Image (cartoon, rainbow, N blue to C red; front, side):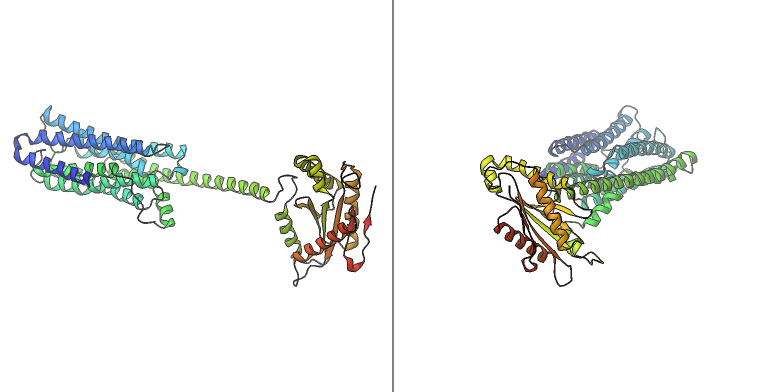
Length: 498
């Protein structure tokens, strides 16, 4: 509120000073115009410092626009005081009044942070340079360095200023309404405040003051209208960062962000078409460059999108690998085991039983107590290597079930074949002769429970897991270092001791 009161006070002082001292009105207006523009530039620098880390460098583009406008005002003062030229539209100042939108147009046309690439910046700089040339040609096709030759030329210049200000105001308003980041919201609030106010005050001043019988600064208290955009920007930048009171649809945000890079190209296209009657080669070049710029931006953005999708796909594959791999042994983990069981259970055309081997390390707690948990981890890694070295059949799946337990999924395997596979694994571990003083066998051994079930729609993998777990329990209860199968089938229980 204090900022608004201060801005109103500045407007009132400017208007009253012009009304009270009309003889010095021109000097008063220039003093106020320079004062408010410098104050606005200072507020932009403040906003840049306020933008956080890393700094939002788009504020420098806005500062550049204000600086170009101030140069235009300086040239206008030079025409009045040094060259004694009272023409309302001298060419040099008009050119800078038109050119000043170029830096902020680049900012408004900028893509979201994640999409700001060097190639996009290069395209924008080329289009901006071409647009500057088109501004120059268009300006001096209407007026000379001394100014407009007649009222119609002055009106044409005013209309050109109206056109670019309206375009910038609409673009800035769209960017402001469709923001999803606090920094964007803050920046585009300032840009929108300036250009929306400039559209209104500039139109009123150009058409009803400068071209309405008051061609010189200071002839009317209405000169204070030109203070409004700069004061509005100062309020927008110096007041606290805006809070989001609405949440635009994500589709709208992405649409505006994706369309914003075309603002600059469309400006080049529009001014290229404007200069075609007088400068056909330059105008056609501008139009072609705009089309190429839009197309090139779209193509390169698509390339980046495909590359990003490929990178994400590779990252997803890596993450999925980490999710399904046991970090200690490098084998598949319990989650991978569950998925493999489920996939095998529902495999079309599955006619043979699915076997499951549940492997438990005998007396592993005593091993940890004797050697420590780090040695226990080394033991599990060595055991995993031994099981892998044993060589499973094609299609068999080895995983760490959890703790000191491992599991093997053997699709298309009957119980007799599964028992033979289990005995081979048990014997392979025993042959390694890993010392285990606290085991009755004097070395590291394993016990394996085996189950085989025909997959059906009325049962599930959990039934197989429970059957193998029961078989493991019976084998451990019978003395360990053995293979146990389903009790109801009276499958042999093979015990080996040393």
